[in-house]
Length: 257
Image (tube, rainbow, N blue to C red; front, side):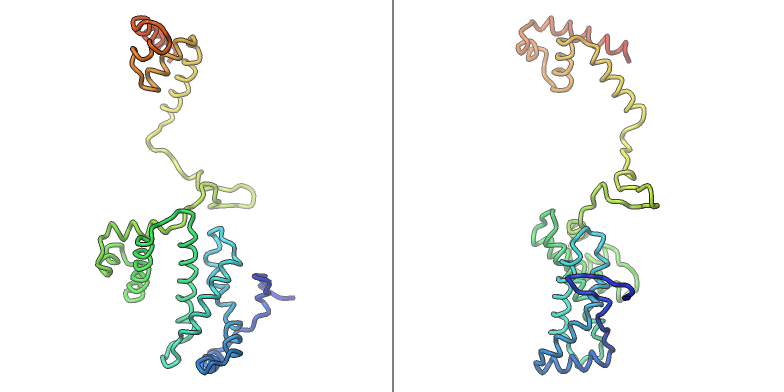
């Protein structure tokens, strides 16, 4: 029995071996000489690293198999571009490469289309944010990022917001095993009050009690913005009659309210 078994792309990741740093270094040196077998072994020996990274993006409703394959592309790029002369662990170099590949995939496949210039600015902003975070050991502000890039703060902020994946109103944010709380449950309209809501219901009920012609006049006057002359011409009566019916209808509505 395998523990922590994950089936992805037809592979049981629990059976994958994990390479030591010495093994990675040896294989990387062989890869530099054009050894395809060493390259294949190095890829297989780092698939668990890819899985651990793509699982961070599992909440985005993307197919995990697709993300895993994209992450493998990032891994292969890291293997092909890694400089063995530097005193750096392979994973230190590979992780941001894999994350970057997955982020590019998610950005380019976003359902909301974003212009190339905005995407490019957002990508540069993410790189600058990571650079500043490593240097200061804290999350940099948008102002610091824009200063690093030499761009307007508003442009950087808008670009970074543009590539954020939209969240469904019906995405669960909490589940206790029985009842779920969704995003929509945590939203409120601060411009509306209970009193306004009740008044709206009362107004609709009062409108139902008007005669057909009175209701039509009120709807055209106050919901469609027509003048008394336009209403008179449309329903075939005089403006004076329209004015009289309007006043009568408003008085009845006031009494109902």
